[in-house]
Amino acid sequence: MSKTILFVDDEINLRTFLSKTLRRDGYEVLEADSLAAARQHLAVSWIDMIILDRVLPDGEGLALLRELRQNESWLPVVMLTAHGAIDNAVAAMKMGAYDYLTKPVEIDELRAHLERMAETVTLHRELEHLRQESGASDSGWVVGQSAVMRKVAEDIDQVAPTNSTVLLTGESGTGKEVVARMLHRQSERSGQPFRPINCAALPEHLLENELFGHESNAYTGAGKQKKGLFEVADGGTLFLDEISSMTPGMQAKILRVIEERMVRRVGGTRDIPVDIRLLAATNRDLDDAMQKGQFRRDLYYRLSVVRIHLPPLRERDGDTPLFAAFFLNRFNREMGKSISGFSPDALSVLRSHDWPGNIRELRNVVERGVVFCSGEQIEVSHLPREIVGQV
Image (cartoon, rainbow, N blue to C red):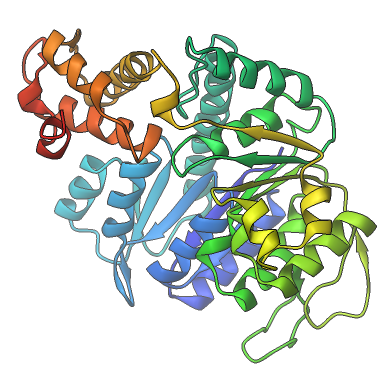
């Protein structure tokens, strides 16, 4: 399976030349000329490796590297710069860059770095699979002890091997994308692309462009032909998060793709067949949205062939300590610490909090505790005041 590289550099000649070369080497290459463009790619595309220029029109590449390390600590990044100062290299390496190359770039040296980075990506994917089979993955999936989540786990095992469309519902932070990735990993499409997109993150015209792509010169600024995610995910899985945010016009276009298994690029005249499994998620009450005429009933019925509801953490009796222990182990590894657990008082605070932000909020609280803890256990003093004050 080819690896996808995000190449972030504002020097168009260098970017074009290296991108063409790397595509001939078998890589998929996405291009960005600014931090803003890079962040947009990261929000909607599956990226395996990044080539990142240090100086960009809207800021320093180190800023993006810092963000990546906060969100995807394993993602390998090679930094490029026209300024070979040793302090820049040291700063990048301390922040977790895989390596640091100076311009002009030696293509063979870059190839060697990318080959080693590709091995890192492959190893990470294999480790994810092994952790998943052992009952928990680094993405935060824990079945837990609650009966409702054991039923969710059973449903996932049953529906994952099929091609059925699945609608995931639940509050923000309950792990809908985690479950979507599990459904993909446990399916026959696991060797093919998994492409997630947050429908609420983009205005309608950009969302349409990301999903359907465009023909060259389809509109002002559309220079080259671009494949949309429906085409890019061909053979694999497309995950539409926050689908209830779509406009009625976009809903109609999605319904057409589901029914006809065809897409048409913006500005195009030709229908293109696609073979994808569609997964969707929402944190909104779609019954209410349908009654208000804000969501199409026909689309709802096509999406909810199988519906899996993820309950909020406050309704998963006894699961909070399990998640807390899981995240503690994870952040111990990442920060090189060996914190053994939580004090009885700290654990009582975690059990008593109602977690409006669900698993995502708990993860952040545990991470903060690991950061501030210098002893053997996380104490109440290491927890946020707003958490402690509510108990």
